[in-house]
Image (tube, rainbow, N blue to C red):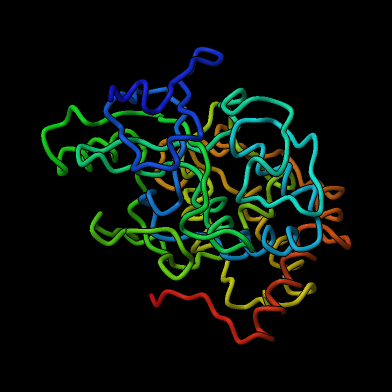
Amino acid sequence: MNNLIKFFIVTLGGLSLLSQAAFADHHSLENVKKGDVIPVTLKQLKPTQASVGYDQIYYKLGRYQFDTEKLFDEMCENNGQKAISKFSRSSNPADMSSYQCTDEIGAKPTDMKTVVIGPDNGLYLTDGHHTFNVLWHMENGGPDFKVHVVVADDYRHLSDMEAFWSQMKDDNNLLLLDDKFQPIEHNQLPTSLGLNNFYNNPYRALMYYTRKIAWEKPKPAFNYVEFYWGKEIFDKIDLSKYDLNSEQGYKKAVEDTAQVILSVDTNNVGGTMRSAERLGQFKGFDKKEFEKLFRKNQKIDYMLRYKKQLNQQGIEHRKAS
């Protein structure tokens, strides 16, 4: 059977979109090209970074336990469907037929996570390591959880995998740094999602929590920008001095990290050859956003409650350095 027929490719907003029926079969990439929206399971995705900010992931996992509308709203966003329009108590994030979104799959591709295709036909995740680790660990999630992604580039024309890794680095589609921002080789990258496969990088999490307070992600997007900021401030602030399991300790860490970000004066943030201003640095501290961050049922509150829950259950996600 012709693969185009088998996977029922349709066109939507200038993008090719493979139907959900493709989930049922081993996904063929023969007819997939750059710009396509394709269905995948999380276990198909290969990471391109070695660490994540656990505390960012814990915030989402904590919030999803209490805020069902936020959960389904983000399920829609992940699939390029903008927002939730209808769900019920029986809706399951793993079953897209159990809830409705405002748009068709792939209608908002700029909201979606991205992959590139390697010469080995592997799907390498270039944006979404935090989001998809949340989906891996949340209730009803896991390695077989289904989501759609955008094919940002296709490297199958390259001669071999060594050429692939070199081109990925040149294109800033690869981050070969460990949790202490030291260089690693591509064979040291995780081979799968799941937190135990990633180092915990608290600087990466702090970059998430200081957004809108001291900086914001630049436009156009710049891959791994939070890590480059983290690398820039790594030797300027010692996070081991803060209690990141308490509100008071986290509040001080966020405030001090934000002030360090605001003080950076360089045209080469984290080795990117880009200025602090170009990578989103604010001119001053946003006190209103800082205070909002620590209110009840906001990011830090959800995150700390979830971490406490893990500690009470004796669960520890950790990859040894």
